[in-house]
Image (cartoon, rainbow, N blue to C red):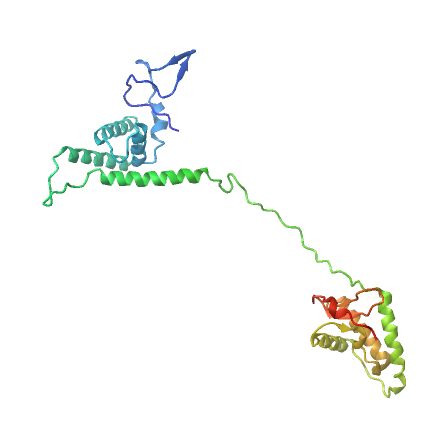
Length: 284
Protein backbone atom coordinates (compact mmCIF):
# COMPACT_ATOMS: atom_id res chain seq x y z
CA UNK A 1 0.00 0.00 0.00
CA UNK A 2 1.36 3.44 -0.95
CA UNK A 3 2.01 5.84 1.94
CA UNK A 4 0.71 9.24 0.81
CA UNK A 5 1.76 12.69 1.91
CA UNK A 6 -0.77 15.34 0.88
CA UNK A 7 0.33 18.43 -0.93
CA UNK A 8 -1.36 20.63 1.66
CA UNK A 9 -0.69 19.89 5.31
CA UNK A 10 -4.04 20.35 7.13
CA UNK A 11 -4.28 19.77 10.85
CA UNK A 12 -6.37 16.59 10.64
CA UNK A 13 -6.14 13.39 12.70
CA UNK A 14 -3.81 10.82 11.16
CA UNK A 15 -5.25 7.60 9.72
CA UNK A 16 -2.72 5.50 11.62
CA UNK A 17 -1.40 5.82 15.16
CA UNK A 18 2.13 7.23 15.31
CA UNK A 19 4.19 6.98 18.48
CA UNK A 20 7.21 9.27 18.89
CA UNK A 21 9.35 8.91 22.03
CA UNK A 22 6.57 6.97 23.75
CA UNK A 23 3.88 9.58 23.04
CA UNK A 24 1.00 9.24 20.57
CA UNK A 25 1.06 11.87 17.81
CA UNK A 26 -2.46 12.60 16.50
CA UNK A 27 -1.66 15.64 14.31
CA UNK A 28 1.16 16.58 11.99
CA UNK A 29 3.39 19.30 13.45
CA UNK A 30 3.26 22.61 11.64
CA UNK A 31 7.04 22.76 11.37
CA UNK A 32 7.37 19.20 10.03
CA UNK A 33 9.89 19.11 7.20
CA UNK A 34 9.29 16.62 4.41
CA UNK A 35 12.14 16.32 1.89
CA UNK A 36 11.03 16.65 -1.75
CA UNK A 37 12.47 13.24 -2.53
CA UNK A 38 10.01 11.68 -0.07
CA UNK A 39 7.19 12.32 -2.53
CA UNK A 40 9.11 10.92 -5.50
CA UNK A 41 8.52 7.29 -4.51
CA UNK A 42 4.79 7.88 -4.09
CA UNK A 43 4.28 9.80 -7.33
CA UNK A 44 6.16 7.28 -9.46
CA UNK A 45 4.04 4.33 -8.31
CA UNK A 46 0.92 5.29 -10.29
CA UNK A 47 0.39 3.49 -13.59
CA UNK A 48 -1.27 6.46 -15.25
CA UNK A 49 -3.82 9.26 -14.78
CA UNK A 50 -6.72 6.86 -14.27
CA UNK A 51 -4.78 5.11 -11.52
CA UNK A 52 -4.16 8.46 -9.78
CA UNK A 53 -7.82 9.47 -10.11
CA UNK A 54 -9.01 6.12 -8.77
CA UNK A 55 -6.67 6.50 -5.79
CA UNK A 56 -8.01 9.99 -4.99
CA UNK A 57 -11.59 8.72 -5.19
CA UNK A 58 -10.99 5.72 -2.94
CA UNK A 59 -8.89 7.76 -0.51
CA UNK A 60 -11.91 9.94 0.28
CA UNK A 61 -14.49 7.12 0.06
CA UNK A 62 -16.27 8.83 -2.82
CA UNK A 63 -18.91 7.01 -4.85
CA UNK A 64 -17.47 6.49 -8.30
CA UNK A 65 -20.92 7.17 -9.81
CA UNK A 66 -21.15 10.58 -8.12
CA UNK A 67 -17.72 12.15 -8.45
CA UNK A 68 -17.34 15.70 -7.10
CA UNK A 69 -15.46 17.00 -10.12
CA UNK A 70 -14.43 20.28 -8.49
CA UNK A 71 -12.70 18.71 -5.48
CA UNK A 72 -11.12 15.89 -7.47
CA UNK A 73 -9.87 18.29 -10.14
CA UNK A 74 -8.19 20.52 -7.56
CA UNK A 75 -6.39 17.59 -5.93
CA UNK A 76 -5.40 16.09 -9.27
CA UNK A 77 -3.95 19.38 -10.54
CA UNK A 78 -2.03 19.81 -7.28
CA UNK A 79 -0.36 16.43 -7.74
CA UNK A 80 0.49 17.23 -11.37
CA UNK A 81 1.97 20.60 -10.41
CA UNK A 82 3.97 18.95 -7.66
CA UNK A 83 5.44 16.47 -10.11
CA UNK A 84 6.47 19.36 -12.35
CA UNK A 85 8.07 21.18 -9.42
CA UNK A 86 10.08 18.09 -8.53
CA UNK A 87 11.23 17.88 -12.16
CA UNK A 88 9.78 14.40 -12.52
CA UNK A 89 9.27 13.08 -16.01
CA UNK A 90 5.57 13.74 -16.56
CA UNK A 91 3.75 11.72 -19.20
CA UNK A 92 1.55 13.64 -21.62
CA UNK A 93 -1.47 11.56 -20.61
CA UNK A 94 -1.45 13.19 -17.16
CA UNK A 95 -1.83 16.61 -18.79
CA UNK A 96 -4.55 15.30 -21.10
CA UNK A 97 -6.51 14.05 -18.10
CA UNK A 98 -6.06 17.41 -16.37
CA UNK A 99 -7.50 19.15 -19.43
CA UNK A 100 -10.39 16.69 -19.51
CA UNK A 101 -11.20 17.35 -15.85
CA UNK A 102 -11.09 21.09 -16.46
CA UNK A 103 -13.47 20.70 -19.40
CA UNK A 104 -15.92 18.59 -17.36
CA UNK A 105 -15.73 21.11 -14.51
CA UNK A 106 -16.53 24.01 -16.86
CA UNK A 107 -19.42 22.14 -18.49
CA UNK A 108 -20.95 21.45 -15.10
CA UNK A 109 -20.76 25.14 -14.22
CA UNK A 110 -22.60 26.17 -17.37
CA UNK A 111 -26.41 26.04 -17.41
CA UNK A 112 -27.73 22.89 -19.02
CA UNK A 113 -29.88 23.59 -22.06
CA UNK A 114 -33.11 21.68 -22.54
CA UNK A 115 -33.67 19.75 -25.76
CA UNK A 116 -36.85 19.90 -27.77
CA UNK A 117 -38.28 16.80 -26.07
CA UNK A 118 -37.62 18.35 -22.61
CA UNK A 119 -34.96 15.79 -21.77
CA UNK A 120 -31.79 16.83 -20.03
CA UNK A 121 -28.44 16.40 -21.79
CA UNK A 122 -26.07 13.63 -20.76
CA UNK A 123 -23.96 14.01 -17.65
CA UNK A 124 -20.50 15.35 -18.69
CA UNK A 125 -18.97 12.95 -16.17
CA UNK A 126 -20.44 9.85 -17.89
CA UNK A 127 -17.44 9.09 -20.11
CA UNK A 128 -14.97 9.60 -17.26
CA UNK A 129 -17.03 7.35 -14.97
CA UNK A 130 -17.15 4.64 -17.64
CA UNK A 131 -13.38 4.72 -18.09
CA UNK A 132 -12.78 4.64 -14.34
CA UNK A 133 -15.11 1.65 -13.89
CA UNK A 134 -13.42 -0.22 -16.73
CA UNK A 135 -9.95 0.54 -15.34
CA UNK A 136 -11.04 -0.55 -11.86
CA UNK A 137 -12.19 -3.91 -13.27
CA UNK A 138 -8.86 -4.46 -15.05
CA UNK A 139 -6.89 -3.46 -11.96
CA UNK A 140 -8.91 -5.83 -9.76
CA UNK A 141 -8.34 -8.67 -12.26
CA UNK A 142 -4.59 -7.93 -12.30
CA UNK A 143 -4.46 -8.01 -8.49
CA UNK A 144 -6.32 -11.33 -8.45
CA UNK A 145 -3.89 -12.79 -10.99
CA UNK A 146 -0.95 -11.58 -8.91
CA UNK A 147 -2.16 -13.69 -5.97
CA UNK A 148 -2.07 -16.87 -8.07
CA UNK A 149 0.94 -19.13 -8.15
CA UNK A 150 3.32 -18.31 -10.97
CA UNK A 151 5.48 -20.81 -12.81
CA UNK A 152 9.20 -20.41 -12.06
CA UNK A 153 8.36 -18.05 -9.20
CA UNK A 154 6.08 -19.94 -6.82
CA UNK A 155 5.88 -23.33 -8.48
CA UNK A 156 8.44 -25.21 -10.55
CA UNK A 157 7.81 -27.87 -13.16
CA UNK A 158 9.41 -31.23 -12.59
CA UNK A 159 12.25 -31.86 -15.02
CA UNK A 160 13.72 -35.23 -14.16
CA UNK A 161 15.14 -37.66 -16.68
CA UNK A 162 13.25 -40.95 -16.43
CA UNK A 163 15.35 -44.07 -15.95
CA UNK A 164 15.81 -46.32 -18.96
CA UNK A 165 13.01 -48.81 -19.43
CA UNK A 166 14.19 -52.40 -19.46
CA UNK A 167 11.88 -54.93 -21.05
CA UNK A 168 12.26 -58.26 -19.31
CA UNK A 169 11.07 -61.24 -21.36
CA UNK A 170 9.94 -64.00 -19.06
CA UNK A 171 11.14 -67.47 -19.91
CA UNK A 172 8.47 -70.09 -20.65
CA UNK A 173 7.28 -71.88 -17.54
CA UNK A 174 7.43 -75.26 -19.30
CA UNK A 175 9.99 -77.61 -17.68
CA UNK A 176 12.73 -78.72 -20.03
CA UNK A 177 12.15 -82.36 -19.09
CA UNK A 178 8.54 -82.20 -20.29
CA UNK A 179 9.72 -80.68 -23.56
CA UNK A 180 12.28 -83.44 -24.00
CA UNK A 181 9.67 -86.11 -23.20
CA UNK A 182 7.42 -84.72 -25.90
CA UNK A 183 10.34 -84.72 -28.32
CA UNK A 184 11.20 -88.34 -27.47
CA UNK A 185 7.57 -89.32 -28.02
CA UNK A 186 7.60 -87.80 -31.48
CA UNK A 187 10.96 -89.43 -32.27
CA UNK A 188 9.56 -92.81 -31.25
CA UNK A 189 6.65 -92.44 -33.63
CA UNK A 190 9.02 -91.27 -36.37
CA UNK A 191 10.99 -94.52 -36.18
CA UNK A 192 7.97 -96.39 -37.49
CA UNK A 193 8.32 -94.56 -40.78
CA UNK A 194 12.11 -94.59 -41.05
CA UNK A 195 12.11 -97.45 -43.60
CA UNK A 196 9.67 -95.67 -45.89
CA UNK A 197 12.15 -92.93 -46.72
CA UNK A 198 13.31 -93.50 -50.28
CA UNK A 199 15.60 -90.55 -50.85
CA UNK A 200 17.22 -87.95 -48.69
CA UNK A 201 15.59 -84.56 -48.65
CA UNK A 202 17.35 -81.34 -47.79
CA UNK A 203 15.31 -79.66 -45.06
CA UNK A 204 15.76 -75.98 -44.21
CA UNK A 205 15.27 -74.74 -40.65
CA UNK A 206 14.28 -71.30 -41.99
CA UNK A 207 11.60 -72.79 -44.22
CA UNK A 208 10.34 -74.94 -41.35
CA UNK A 209 10.10 -71.82 -39.13
CA UNK A 210 7.94 -70.15 -41.76
CA UNK A 211 5.80 -73.25 -41.99
CA UNK A 212 5.25 -73.34 -38.22
CA UNK A 213 4.31 -69.66 -38.23
CA UNK A 214 1.88 -70.25 -41.07
CA UNK A 215 0.18 -73.02 -39.07
CA UNK A 216 -0.10 -70.79 -35.98
CA UNK A 217 -1.41 -67.79 -37.91
CA UNK A 218 -4.09 -69.88 -39.62
CA UNK A 219 -5.29 -71.41 -36.36
CA UNK A 220 -8.03 -69.98 -34.14
CA UNK A 221 -6.52 -71.02 -30.83
CA UNK A 222 -3.72 -73.02 -29.28
CA UNK A 223 -1.97 -75.74 -31.23
CA UNK A 224 -0.82 -78.97 -29.58
CA UNK A 225 2.94 -79.22 -29.68
CA UNK A 226 2.96 -82.71 -31.20
CA UNK A 227 0.77 -81.68 -34.17
CA UNK A 228 3.59 -79.55 -35.56
CA UNK A 229 5.58 -82.65 -36.41
CA UNK A 230 5.12 -84.85 -39.46
CA UNK A 231 6.34 -88.30 -38.53
CA UNK A 232 6.33 -89.35 -42.18
CA UNK A 233 9.42 -87.15 -42.63
CA UNK A 234 11.38 -89.38 -40.29
CA UNK A 235 13.89 -88.35 -37.68
CA UNK A 236 15.42 -85.66 -39.86
CA UNK A 237 12.07 -83.87 -40.27
CA UNK A 238 11.30 -84.14 -36.55
CA UNK A 239 14.70 -82.69 -35.60
CA UNK A 240 14.38 -79.82 -38.08
CA UNK A 241 10.89 -78.96 -36.80
CA UNK A 242 12.04 -79.13 -33.19
CA UNK A 243 14.98 -76.78 -33.87
CA UNK A 244 12.66 -74.41 -35.76
CA UNK A 245 10.29 -74.29 -32.75
CA UNK A 246 13.18 -73.60 -30.36
CA UNK A 247 14.45 -70.80 -32.58
CA UNK A 248 11.00 -69.18 -32.72
CA UNK A 249 10.79 -69.37 -28.93
CA UNK A 250 14.23 -67.79 -28.61
CA UNK A 251 13.15 -64.93 -30.87
CA UNK A 252 9.97 -64.43 -28.73
CA UNK A 253 7.76 -65.11 -31.73
CA UNK A 254 5.85 -68.01 -30.17
CA UNK A 255 5.31 -69.24 -26.62
CA UNK A 256 4.80 -72.58 -24.91
CA UNK A 257 1.83 -73.12 -22.57
CA UNK A 258 1.26 -75.95 -20.08
CA UNK A 259 -1.49 -76.04 -17.43
CA UNK A 260 0.28 -78.37 -15.03
CA UNK A 261 3.26 -80.73 -14.88
CA UNK A 262 3.08 -83.63 -17.35
CA UNK A 263 0.09 -81.99 -19.05
CA UNK A 264 0.01 -81.56 -22.84
CA UNK A 265 2.13 -78.72 -24.22
CA UNK A 266 0.59 -76.15 -26.53
CA UNK A 267 1.99 -73.53 -28.88
CA UNK A 268 0.60 -70.02 -29.25
CA UNK A 269 1.68 -66.78 -30.84
CA UNK A 270 3.60 -64.46 -28.53
CA UNK A 271 1.29 -61.95 -26.86
CA UNK A 272 -1.89 -63.94 -27.51
CA UNK A 273 -4.32 -64.05 -24.60
CA UNK A 274 -4.34 -67.36 -22.72
CA UNK A 275 -7.76 -69.00 -22.43
CA UNK A 276 -7.60 -71.87 -19.88
CA UNK A 277 -10.59 -73.64 -21.47
CA UNK A 278 -8.74 -73.97 -24.79
CA UNK A 279 -5.82 -75.77 -23.18
CA UNK A 280 -7.88 -78.21 -21.11
CA UNK A 281 -7.84 -80.97 -23.72
CA UNK A 282 -7.18 -84.59 -22.93
CA UNK A 283 -3.96 -85.90 -24.37
CA UNK A 284 -4.25 -88.93 -26.58
